[in-house]
Length: 157
Image (cartoon, rainbow, N blue to C red; front, top):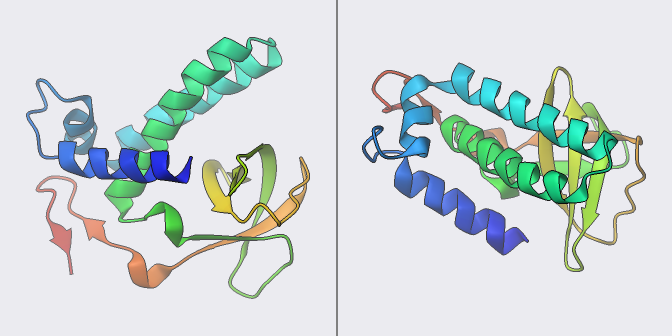
């Protein structure tokens, strides 16, 4: 799955400067981070509703949209999937988060987390045991952050 996330991330970066009339990704970048966050929240709610209703096929479909919109927001903020650090033990720069979904994929595990008012997905080593509703700590490699002007799309120094 990490390869899939990496490919999706590269596809989002490649599409962000396309014509917004024909590219959903370019339209989201044109509208800015607040619209990106709104779409991400909408998709997260749809996944939760489908999961509560026991509709596994809908959860899969909506999860694809959720991952896409998360990746768009990450790209806008300059965050790469490998820049998210997750730990089951508290550490100084960590932000507390709660796990609401885990997906073990053999060579890695993805954890969907409630982080403050938002939601993120973190990738971790499968040897790390992640219990549902457990508290974990998350940090981001801030040296890897890039910020962009919403209007021009140009990187801010």
